[in-house]
Amino acid sequence: MTRIDSHHHIWTVSRGDYGWLTPDLPIYRDYSLDDLRPLLGDIGATVLVQAAPTEAETAFMLTVARASGGLVRGVVGWTDFTAPDAATRIADLARDPLLKGLRPMLQDIVDPRWILRPDVEPALRAMVQAGLRFDALVQPRHLSVVAELCARHPDLRIVVDHGAKPAIASGALSPWADGIACLAAETSVCCKLSGLVTEAAADWRIDDLRPYVDHLIACFGAERLMWGSDWPVVDLAGGYARWRQTADDLFGDHDRDAILGRTAALFYDLAWP
Image (cartoon, rainbow, N blue to C red):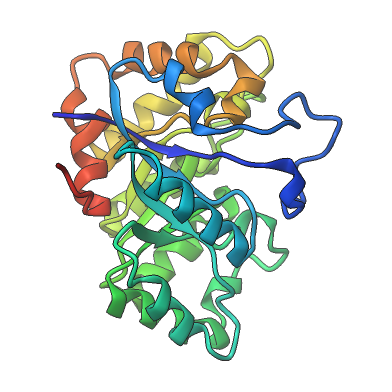
């Protein structure tokens, strides 16, 4: 089974649409696939995920994916879900076989129920019709909303990014743990083991992460979990290699082929040579 990094980014700062990426951050510089390749180890395929809420970002990522020599097997892009012609735009984007999903940046939207608004419905229906996946970039406050989204659109394939960003730095498990347990039990959503170290304290150790990873594994099982690096954001919290080794240690006896490849391949319908 090919090992898959199910969640990473690239960016070119001069493109100017990364509103969250400010000069005070250590990762305020260009990151390309050439920077990523030496870090991959046994990772043989990746999913490239949007980092800017623009359609220019989607076009940029698809161009990079096409030139990646088969490394990037899928792209999760962005489009305006509230545009009057959103359904048409989504259908057009879905004609590119490398586009596997879309991700509105829900964590940055003030209204936690935005995704349930009537003006977003046509976009969600178009995603289902086009066979696209939905990456839910959410926080614990959104978990009940994701459950309601599943109920309204049972045919929409959804993955929760970054384990829904639990408050690891403070050591708090509630209300995140209860929300995750309910979502996993009541829906068929998948979840990404990614982005957890940037929710931890700067001096995090493996035992700080263990209760959260153990809970995600207990709730979703290996068949609904996929590992992702969240590179280059992970460079803010120890880097690619440290997170990969830590996650590997936390998996224990669970199905590594699923977490490190099979779940992502099935969820995103990744093509293999």
